[in-house]
Image (cartoon, rainbow, N blue to C red; front, top):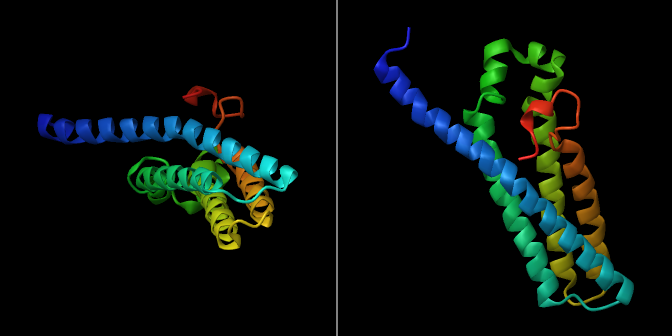
Length: 169
């Protein structure tokens, strides 16, 4: 039986987790807009054989910052929220792996998103290293497209079976 004190301690924590989850869901759209923008910018620069400008670098930088912020919030949710480590500890890894919903959040989502964010970092770093050479656009384009595909596969879209209740936010 919960006492008033326990409810008070759980209330703010639940509020914080809900707020972080909503922020994580909202920031998804920012990341998607930025990766589409950076990818299109790289594609257009590659097609026009233009040099890699400071605007191109900033586009990649903003994408990388948004991805890093998204990763930080996601890691907090993974460690402190109900679908990451807590779920693995409560029902065991074997049970998590047998349940598609639990497996998605405990393993697939976090692993694939980390890979996508690493690709964003690699694409930006390699393009920055190439400097103003037109090859920088091609490098960033390839890395961003692969990262974008992985992100799209790894997002819990409401049209995916089992994720309908999550909604579009």
